Amino acid sequence: MQGNELAYQVYSPGSVLGLFSNALKLNATVNLIYLKGRYSFGGGKAYGNYYYDNLFSESDTISIGVRVSALLRSKIENNEIYILRGYIEKSIKNSSVELRFVVDEIIQQEERAISEEELQRYELIQKKLGKGSKDLETVIREKILKDEPIRIANIYGNNAIVQRDFAEGLDVSQKYFQVSEYTCSITSSTSIVSKLEEVSALGYDIIALVRGGGDKQSMETFNDLQLSELFITIEAVTVTAIGHTVDETLLDKLADKRFHLPHDYGAGLHSIVEKLSHEKSNSRALLIDEVKKDVGKQFAEQVLTLEKQLKTKNDEFTEAQKNFKEQAENQVKIFTEQLKVRNEEVEKLKKDLTEKHGQQVKTLTDQLSKRTEEFQKFQESSAKQLQETQKSFSEQQKLRQQEMESYKKELNVLHEKNLQSVINEKTASLKAAVESLQQENVRLNTEVKNSKTDYIKIVIAAVIALVTGFLLAKLF
Image (cartoon, helix red, strand yellow):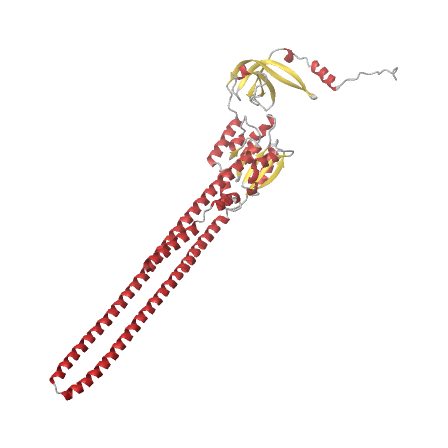
């Protein structure tokens, strides 16, 4: 085996790439050359005091990577035409050889002419401005107030994995949205147009183009004029979240709402829902305060009415006592006058008896005795009548007292019933207004219920004590 030597040369993958890299010995790689094109900033960060940008051909979207020092880059404006001097450097990456232009000097900045495509883009932007943008927050607010789900169509790339980023940003607000996911070739304007035409006919509230980033050239898809024409005719709220922060594409300018990243898109929707929840909570607190004030006002009016009725009854009882006293005094006065008349008659009879003869004296004595007996009977009858009158007065007074006690009990029962009726009515009205908010305000409702003070019981106890004290003061 050791004597059998191989008759051919064996290479490794690294040695093959090294051979081809060393074989690319062109004048452009060893000498300084001049390049002209549209300069476009890259990621915006410097590595080792160098920036890595792109230089595009003026007539198409072909570009070459550029490495430039921080000092030279500070003199360059983004998307302007430059003539640059430098050299080509090679680097091996996996199984490919990558070329990069290293800038040595800025030779000239040329004034860029306005192309027909740029004029069309400008017209599209003006057309969008004339049509106006739909407000994302307003659409979400109207749907939530009507207790309707917000229907969203998110268009992703065929192999996209950013759906989870969007869901994490949306967080607990997912219950308010019905999210449908569609896929297409996100780097092909024709594929996006076809998918937008399909989705826009399904009556969604929000239609969004979502991707997680990509190379610079793939972003040119979102500057396509045909795609942009369709984009501004969509009735739904249009959203872009195509994963780049440095440059703004034409679709970003034409969208009703732009987010940089899919997570920002979900978090933006969550933020709007949170804001509306706080507004609704504040409105519900104001409604509860108004109901409390209304119930307190009606309760005070009822107490005032009951006090007026009680005062009227007390006045009627006082008037009845006064009338009874006047009747008793009149009875005593009549009895006194009758007694006086009888005494005068007795005196007169005594005087007549002394003047007449003895026979008449006996007769008169008999008459006097008879009259005396009648008078005594009259006195007894009058005394008995007076006792009965006093007894009747006592019984009437006792009945009046019982009526007052019964009236107080009825007042208490009536007061409790009216108060309970008002409380039940207002509570039912409050429940009806609050039930529509219970699903999104479970935590806030719990806090409100736990901190709510039992004002109604305190007011009831205070009013009962006030009425009882008033009645006792009147009676004693």
